[in-house]
Length: 376
Image (cartoon, rainbow, N blue to C red; front, top):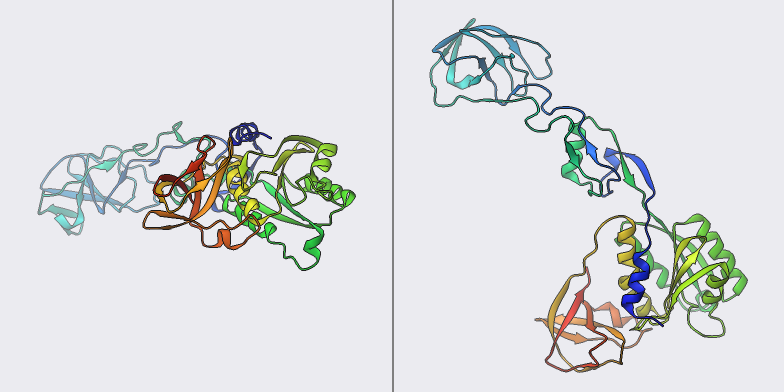
């Protein structure tokens, strides 16, 4: 049996660095697997920011020699009292210094008279937004609605991102074929989705060594990560420890925490395998404590617990060296423990978070402050 911190150190060693290319319209929520370096200047040319007349010096009137609209690729030059009508976003003549707004002028055929100098605009120079060769997005950046537009502006159609792990979910237990409902697979699947990974339900295995072994082999071949529930303790029909030991390696079995103490973690076919306790509250707590942050790391995204201080409504007694995580209901920053047992559904139904009683705290008394890990 190991401490929670020791278990976390073992989990920290795992990485998932597979990559793929996706179209930018499908890239939302993905994480870049390489730097994005611009191979163009943005703007690609000197452009006007308004509808107006491009000029090279300030005069009272000008002679109109041409017109330029967005998308035109004219290489024009103006001199002296010449001007060019340029639409917003249009390419200005090479030696343009100013753009006079249309509304500040009067035009008669090819003659443009300035009636007000209260607003004379400059221009956006080539590369003033993004320079060619500039690193725009760094490896590890989460793609969102803001930087997708930048990628499109650079003319990028596909980007290299980290793959999303496929997480195989297997429930075990003869009781699941009878009156008991398979709750844990839905719970685990929800945690997998919360981490933006892909859950794959692999069915239910009876309490039979060979059947479980066959399904674990299949899971390790189809998926990047395997998560099971049930059959992980020390009972006569708890076969998961034997299966994992035979097919791969047990990295830890039993953690000093309640609920969730029987949990096992190991490798099969070099794939990580989490074996969660069968009790519903224990399964959920282990999923929050270990699986969720592990999956977030696998997709290269940070995970942060939301922890607040609250006043404990009643005394909680723990045991030496164990981390206690007790479901609590919050009212006006008072934490009311509602834990009724690891297999009682309502122990978690109305909970707002988990009250944390750390390893060196053998008890917490009524009225004391405790940390509460808030559910999302």
